[in-house]
Length: 366
View (tube, rainbow, N blue to C red):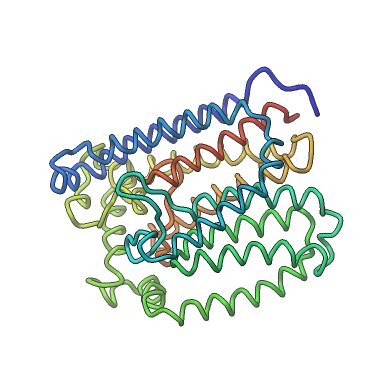
């Protein structure tokens, strides 16, 4: 293994801290009205997000100093634990139901979302598998089928909750990793057609998913029902203009946009900081992805390269889907915006993933 650098990628670290700072600020700005009404404390969500950020930063610091190949040795245990948690969360009385999905285990503030852990566990395990079997990836039966069988088993358990958004991010991330490992485009085309048929079946099997599709195409066909969130999101983005209304001056957070501190936080950011603020945020994400790709290209071994690619792909897919939903370009899927959306499991796991990427950067020749 290459000699370790004295420090991780400082630019990547600065970008992470900038995004995290913007996220905490926007969580407070977006949630103060709702938090004061519901909990009589305008800082309720901001304080909790600050706590999650503190825990995540401590975990990131620790993991930055743990050699990344350590996770390869622990990957089988990790993914086994995640599969057990995905099964446990489906048991009535064990899993907690929120917003129609039985996706949490725990009690009150001390709850976790196993599907978030599975995303990272799958990236680590699949990185090891691809590093060992890259020469077989052009073979559909020997290389591709075993990898996809594991991925879609996890996807199936996540869909039983149901949580289409998280499942989509996990599958999309794994597909990018497998493609980078050398899988044939023909195989992906065949699987893509099968996946499209499966997606259509999933949509048709649940009326609420069909409503999300139709509301995405024409939200004004049901403005008080399935199209409500998208319409209110667009009402937030539009008045933002070029420079925005100013921090704390959002109008849509006054009980128009439901729970604006979560999946639709970008709409509040665009309303308060305008087109310039939104583009600045996208620039930060673009720089983070650029640094991640550089780290992946310079990693000293295949495992490190695939692991970095997986982390970068996960962030990129979440950002694209979240902002696509908020701007009305995609159906509502319930995916958080990395570093910004309120949520303990998603924020902590994202910072853990960044810790792994920072550790790879200590060995990467970029």
